[in-house]
Length: 102
Image 1 (cartoon, rainbow, N blue to C red):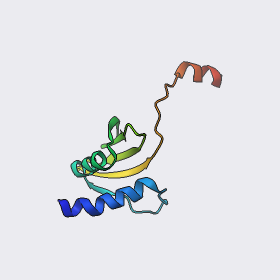
Image 2: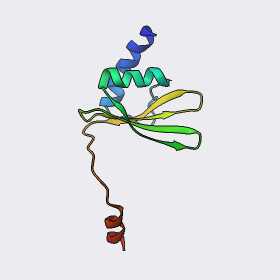
Image 3: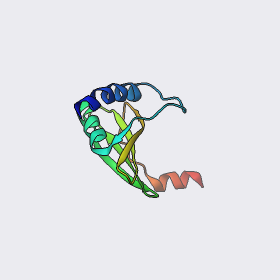
């Protein structure tokens, strides 16, 4: 497992720090290993989750503001879909947005 994590950590750092072209290969692996990597390398913890068909989408966020969107398939394989920096919590007031749209 350690041999797997070293190259994955390097790939994850590159994937999360640089924009990914549409054709780029995604970082994927067993969910437990990918989430441990996000925690160890970036101190990211699960913040939100939802289902898309039979797949789970999760948002991981760190106190420093880094974030990652993770997609997990039913077979337990997770793939990093996107990531970035400067995550902030901002409340959305749906009623105000709806009023402005009218």
